Image (cartoon, rainbow, N blue to C red; front, side, top):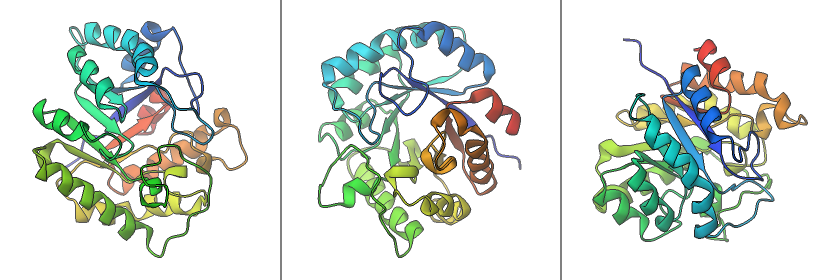
Amino acid sequence: MKREIQLMAILNVTPDSLFGSRVGDFGMCIRKMLDEGADIVDVGGESTGPGSSDVSPEEEWARIEPALKILQNLKKERDFQISVDTYKADVFERALQYGVDILNDVTALCGDPKMVKLVAENDAKVCLMYAVQRLSAKGNEIRTNTEEIQYDDVIKTIGDALEERMNFCTQNGIDRSKIILDPGMGAFVSGDHKYSWEILDRLQELKERFPDLPLLIGASRKGFTGPGLPPEERLPGSLKAAELAVRNGADILRVHDIAPTKALL
């Protein structure tokens, strides 16, 4: 049976994101994403990349609310899901009033102790992402860096970490069927690019470990897809990463480039 691959469009309403930041042109941008085939629109108001800055909950909310208003209105006429990329419970709680379906939390619910109860009580879907920062001496560090972390077995390390967070969720009232897993990519894993490609090559091992849970891959325009190239020149590598991800079991692709990725599929 041919499985359906969903495309999650990245809508960064930030001034300092890796690629494709949008400030002010939400309506036209969102409609274009949906016209090109996006199944999910993921709105983010804070970059977590190397060198990015902390954002207060008030500033993050001020950035994403205008986009959420447009998305809520578009849901009346189009079939898609809204995702919010945040680790702050105060931001997600406000976002829920706009019909948000998915929490995309780069901390896997480590960043805010109030988040797990909020997700459970609202029966929301949650994407749990692996990030090496959670395993470091810094604890719940949010910002990524380019340190070349080394692994004995990157897939086992990621699988164990995701299983721990998944168990945390189910023990705190989140239904297992609501969980999406993201093994992380790029600097969330290591500044050593080989590990991101190894994850894509071995993704089927995670699929076999968690056969009932969707796997999300967010490789788009990240540094490992075009070493030495600026983000605007990394589309070929991004498409290669998407191809590997789908061949090896990914269910959701989080991408900047909807039309080329749709054509690839």
